[in-house]
Image (cartoon, rainbow, N blue to C red; front, side, top):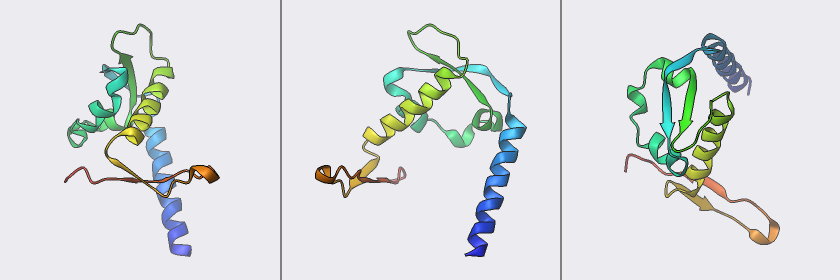
Length: 114
């Protein structure tokens, strides 16, 4: 209804304002990740203890044992690796996949508190 549309619009406006506020604000510290352990490293961190800049600012990323400067490509790579590894983790329950119809499964994220 109208109230859910207005709530969605407010959420999107707030997200846009946060994006503008933190655009170009890079973390001073480089975040180090191991390519096969990106999801584990982030999932096991205490994100609630992260500073606001770390949550909303632009990450400077380095992958262990790989050379390169993060010009944005490594950030995208880490986000992609995070979601790929999340999907493969035990935290995701797959329901309703039908390979004959090429229908993707519905994914549910399990409660990490249990």
